[in-house]
Amino acid sequence: MLNARYVSEHTAQEECSIIFPEYFAGQIFEAKHEPGTIAYSPELQLRLLQETTDEMARNGCKNVVIVNAHAGNEYLLPYFAQSQLYKPHDYVVYVQWGYESGKKARTAESGPDLHAGETETSRVMVTRPNLLHMDRAASESGADQKRVKLPQSVFTGIGWYARFPNHYSGDGTLATQELDETDVGNWVATVVRAIRAIKADDGEPEVTEGVLREKRAPPGYSPLKSVLRP
Image 1 (cartoon, rainbow, N blue to C red):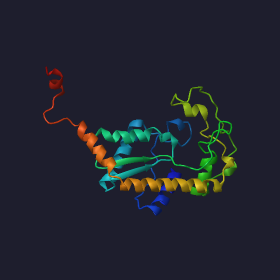
Image 2: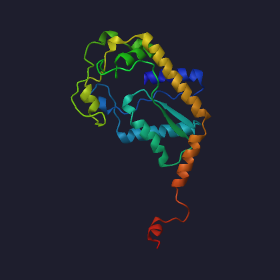
Image 3: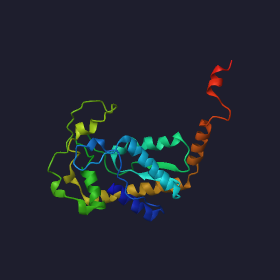
Image 4: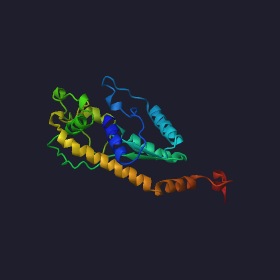
């Protein structure tokens, strides 16, 4: 969340945007065992997110861009965006996910680098260095425990915990500020390009409205009569 906030603030410096306060009510069931975790029910998460974007739109924001930095939202946010087609809205939800970091891809031999590993720790060196405690980076293992042996094509909710029960993935001791000044810069540039493209695009609202219009039944239409018609 702190990294996404940093990126959003620096994006707004390059492309005029309204920044909503930090939004922390995401999907986090995989970390319920960690002290301090607040994991709202799925129903509340979706309702709160929907009412938040509804209120943003009521205040005049017709393009709502969710800048995500938490892999735990990888399935929640795209589903939320798709669920906007359930009924008409006078605004559009966009999910900004991922960017080209420019880093060399890690191999299986080099180990994982996910939560609080080299990359994320490097990002915090840039975004919130006052919160970083490098002396703790080696206090526990961030190795993949591989306790569930399933193909990559198979997803299970316990998969993350089975791999990283400490919620630590990788080696934070390898972090460097130089590594992520470029990485965070690329992230900001990606969001800037996304917002500029969204501002310039009339296609998404037009296509969405067309789809919703097609889904509406014409006046006087009766599914029962349609089925029984000889």
